[in-house]
Image (cartoon, rainbow, N blue to C red; front, top):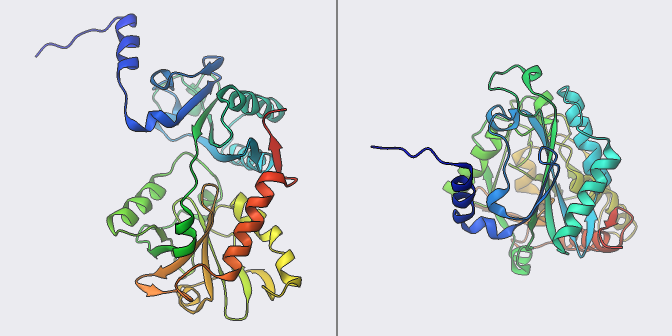
Length: 324
């Protein structure tokens, strides 16, 4: 068998020939390594010796653009900076400069609905585990198209089950690193079991989170509850939803808003259960481990929270316009 040694021109031609369906949603990439924006999906690349690639040594955020406005941009950037600090990863540029790059790269696509996938890596420079071998940290931003779930999904709800994947240790669970193998395995098990999501259970029997989303519930006394942030990521959409939920107290939809340790028993006894995340918004859970939850369809609080959150995305104070 002979193997061809490719020339630079042949490599570029092959990269542009290669294609797969997901690339149709890749609108633009900013790379600090290249120093600009790439719009050809075939050329959206990261150096293979970047610690991000071979060690998962980096942090990331997924941010949503709705009707030309970036939702919770400041909150995502603050969490990114905090995650980077916890693993001793210096930022490749100041936060305000990152913010400008995000808005300009998004504007370059002309998209009004998108998901921004922001990565800060240790950078290229070798294949060892030594982070100091890397030449400098880098920033990569991929703008992808976004299509919301069908309205029917929010009415019918989703099926959820118990994860067999051990949760991350508390210190790691609170950092949004690119080391996402447990999350990948959780998604794999949900697909293999023909479920929409699985939920982690810690060593004490308390609920943690899904592969990329938080779980919250309404108990029989109309208390809105989220798990304690001991061994889960502090979801930006979940936290904003709980802020918006304050208005539901005076309207009688809720009795209180709390954070507490939750178990599977709480799920089975709940009036409503919801998955909350960047691309999901507020998605009702209507079945857990084969048992119907609540009335088996979207509940009153789920509907109200979804409405509040989507209004906030389009015109709230946490929404940043891309196009002047």
